[in-house]
Length: 156
Image (cartoon, rainbow, N blue to C red):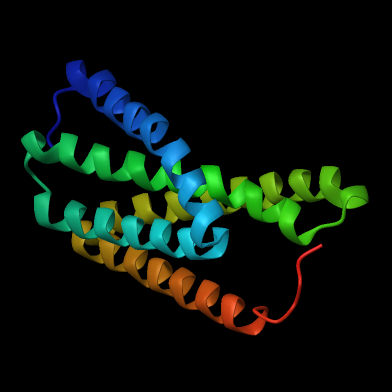
């Protein structure tokens, strides 16, 4: 995005500050309206972040806006996703469930970022953003189906 390498640590700082600031409010909102609904909000924030990447590409000045949006996404998802595990898994299986969650999410994060970078390098930012948007909307749809399907089932 044209960011000078000397200010990249500042961009990462913006991501981390936004991540930290949103964590508690995301948790409070999850307790009020439901964790699954807040995950949908998080996926939507990621979609907005992807769109911002396409719209602001080539302008290092806007990298801070993008970093802020991405930090908000991370803060919402990383706070709430872990809380969902304990809601649906019995206490005897929580340890292995958290381990499996971290394994699967780590592998998926690695593969998706490698794919995103490859698409960006070969085909450009717009197709890479389209890739992200497709998965964002798939996540929103999947979580919506999950909420509808399991709305009558009591969590453990």
